[in-house]
Length: 434
Image (cartoon, rainbow, N blue to C red):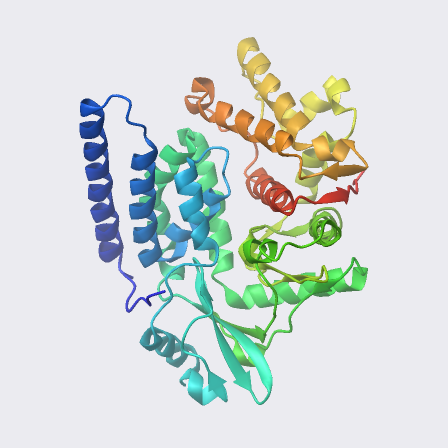
């Protein structure tokens, strides 16, 4: 993949890039409607393909928060046209990398030395590149290291980037004004944390050691090196393995699929219900899989700390008979701001019906001792309902934000986990917190 020689870092440069992209999108719409005038049966697929390509190419050059939002939206397969979700998935670990001079400049800024002066050997060609940073191979003696380098200007452009990408995200995700405000607020808080590599190092060590001490299974975690790390550079032992798409191409046995699926489930279950602190970026770019069924975890940049009072309310819905306990369910729905005291009877009936359906769908795996995530019918039902929600006028035009902001990353975590388990076609044991 061709490297990128410079990144627009000033607000003016980045805003200009957004404007140019908007012009391209406008041309795509003009081309679409011209074709449709000639041939009324013309579908919107080509329009989606053109827009997804142009928007992704632009965000890839900008890097940072804008590209991160695209990566997050790639996980929203129930509301995004396939062209967008397929293209944005590339942001997880396949974005255009930085050129060598930009890498050297970053090292000089934070260490006062070039990478060649710090390491015995440093590969200037990135191994992979995502939304916030890219990874290089390095050596100290015979020790093979992975060095994650954050893109220049990412941390400083979070707020302005989110303002620029907001209209696009609102249109694609079909969120009302209140929900997009909550969505962007929570995303901003997580991105500020995610660009702090010193915080990531601390959390990586804390969570990986806790999971190893719990002896949950065949996990592989890396060792971190504070002496080779800074606010924008993070160095760790190299970890081998395959990302999920490449792993599936090896045609692993069902036994190995189930083993890795169980590790993924137990990994998140322990964090959710014991640590109350969870790796909230469950996409294939953050895991490395092995033919023997071992699972490597390589990124703790995005961690959601779950407040105790919110935890008690959020997970009350996992109780098997919660639908048969209307008073308990109602109390939780009001406390979590799914319902409001000044809602009309019609609004209460409408939104409660939606949330009961959602609870039934999302919590269905918890109703069983084992669950086959390879059951595509379940996911079709899940995505179909999500698509139906995205088109509901009552939701888009609601003057209230429905649900606590704390639920955004937890919902995203479960959707991401379910999606990976579905790709693995894993049949696993379901551990329950109640």
